[in-house]
Image 1: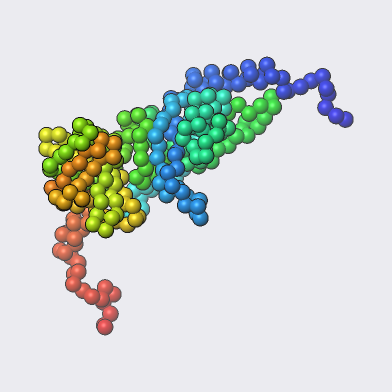
Image 2: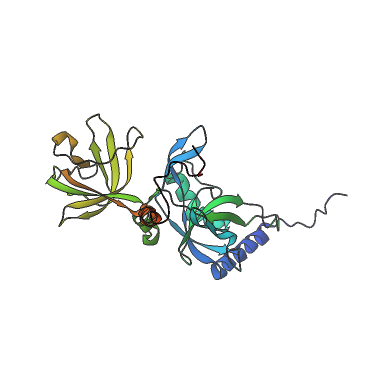
Length: 307
């Protein structure tokens, strides 16, 4: 016998009311978070991985954290490489709210190729939780839970892992997020001399600076700090046109001057200093100094067997 034609669980008015109740509940019991769409700058077409990506916008929206007691995952692990934090969380967001706050903007201005609107969150996007000051990366988006209540799917469930920062460009407009790029990246401090301003504009924070080697390789980086008193600039996110390692270098040659792509300001580099934020907690020198007291580093045969 077929289903009774006089009863239906797909009434539009009931579906809309159910969705409104879900949205109201998320606003009452959820958390304000920032959704960060990933913008892929270059992609490995063989492995399908993003070689370089950036997060250039943030969208504030309410989400519910499904983990009531604590974050899931393996928690804090002590390994031979140090402490690893493997927290996981599941975020619940309204479909209608996500599409209106994030979907249309991300699709038309960030994603490649451009589309009119996006239907759902993407794996690889980030969620910033101000409550714990944590960034989570979306690993999987579940779109069929709860399973068709009133023949409707009102929410997305995003299963996320704690994000491991690896040099991505962060220009979201949220200070707590953008500071990660300045506090946890490899940086160099360059002292400038003979500054010229062809466009009457001085170097400015956020612009890309460039220096060319004698072999024609372009060294680029993002200017994140400029001290006009000492004429020192701090640069991070350093890259090269040939994909190899080439540091900025001291030079007074006109063809080797550093130049700002936005302001066209130019200068010689008189002093080059590394400010490696990544290596601040390394203990190589401590191990080398303390270890000489009980380890014979001159021993060629670590097993002690006759050669």
